[in-house]
Length: 159
Image 1: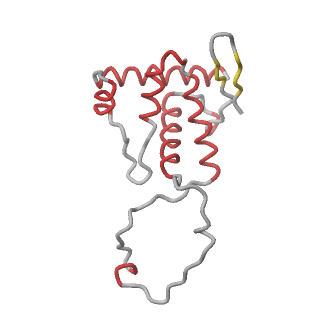
Image 2: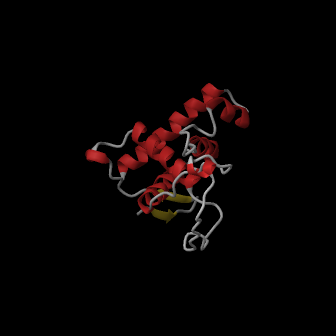
Image 3: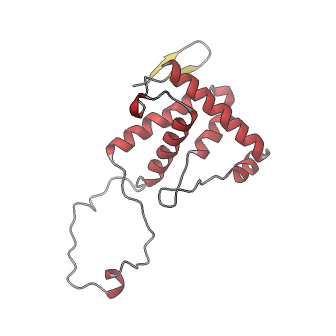
């Protein structure tokens, strides 16, 4: 679990030790993949709150032909993430707190780039759209993203 310590200037987030698959060192590829998995998990969560809908059973005797073949008017929803994925999501999104508060633009970039659609695996914020939202060139946004990921990797390597 991560520790949050209070200093005189600001709150500093110190991540706990991160277990990588096969004991490999923490690198940028690992951090980016975990952040994208966390973003997809976050978007896959239901946003309507707790409901008893899953407990209620509704048995339909006769279904229409369209429903039998899987074509309905409903939007395709991803499966509800497992508790292990939600735990990994909480851990990975906590890594954004490693970036200093005065570098809030880097935090925004990393947070926005981590949002990946859970069904299509496409980024919700492509580089050019993110650059337009920040009023910067998309190549500069890519460089800033690399800098932010390097900060996270350095912090996780120290932990």
